[in-house]
Image (cartoon, rainbow, N blue to C red; front, top):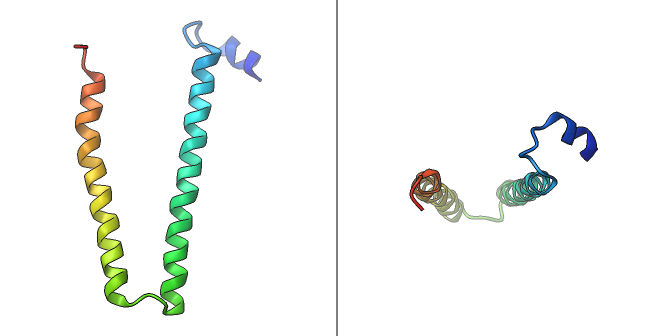
Length: 86
């Protein structure tokens, strides 16, 4: 399979680059599975009535805040990585 990719991609793309892309894809896949699993556990606990409404609201607010902080931190990191000055 790598041989077929090597023929279609420019010579600047090496096997190592392809391995890094696949590794990043697998990490994203595992992270999405973990996040979906956490949401599923919260949903099941809510349906079963195990989690009080106040605690559930606090959990969802905390998730939203963490996501917002992640995005706020991601923007400067993105522009810093794209900078031509090193």
